[in-house]
Length: 180
Image (cartoon, rainbow, N blue to C red):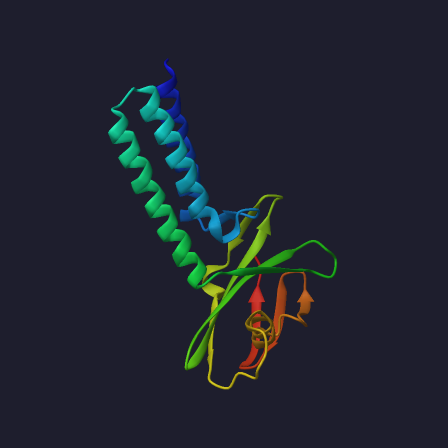
């Protein structure tokens, strides 16, 4: 089997792995919200390597490289518009760990977005899809936007009822998250 086939098989398995993870709402902890950029960069690198090994015309490789870079830069720009910050809290006994991805966007009123993930094993986290929250407010006190994400949810003082249930006293009421 030649090198170009090995590269294509690797890319197929790599993409299939991340597709299965995403469909089942699993993510790698260390990649967080940039996992799609990671997959795009790896694909671009290996496709360029494949094109060079196949001895495709230099112009074609050059064009594909710059189109791929343009797409990745556009995705990175979109990410910078509403970046997600990750925080985590650990249950009192240290058995469970909850990751919270939070971001906000303001245009007159501020919209806060909270996605909750439960740690599964050492490198995976599973999104608790049905428990994601979106809070909207018009009366934000002055302060740092990142601190407001934490204060709006009440992330600075979580209340663990047991190892599978945590509640937050948000500015819009009590929010309870149930872990699997």
